[in-house]
Image (tube, rainbow, N blue to C red):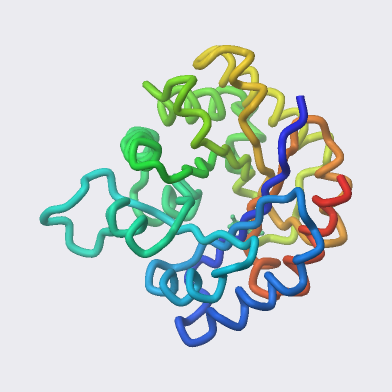
Length: 254
Ligand code: PEP
């Protein structure tokens, strides 16, 4: 099964609205020859209008870093899927480990957000991954299976057309430590197997699974060469057009 590679940047809380157009245009310009890869910049909500305007007419698509499950109401500080669609976003990252660690995100709230994002027509990039402590305690499989089973509860085979999963070992995010290609492949295979039990093997084969955790131009090719690694979710290296483009180039050749 050949799955189109998808490289998504997660800008986190790093780029101002006034800096957005230059970065998006830099990415678009540096990657215009790399057809065959889906390119996404997930930006702070306040950057989305500038990002969408800068990406117009290019192959770069824009995403958000979170979304609430309710469509509207008294949820101060939250952003709905309808607002994101209105602003031109196409993707939403859900359940990033920083949201789980600092903002009380649970597998249950990941599930509510994921179902709302998919129902809205946006594509959810759902993050799973273990901490170093969990890995060292031999709980890797248990943690991944729980995050998948609860986070994707009631997500159907049809919903999977709007689903991307990101495997992000927490110990590799922003630390410079990368999972080896074999370590990452092992977990990607587990994710696909777990997904197969939820939505069927045939559908699970179609879902793209990104690796995230200190991916950069120098290590992207060997990770992306693995059978079940279908792209990357990129933090630090997405903040410079040249670095991000280097990863997209590796994906185009994988
Ligand atoms: C991330 O935050 O999703 C991430 C993978 O960060 P970094 O690439 O900086 O490790």
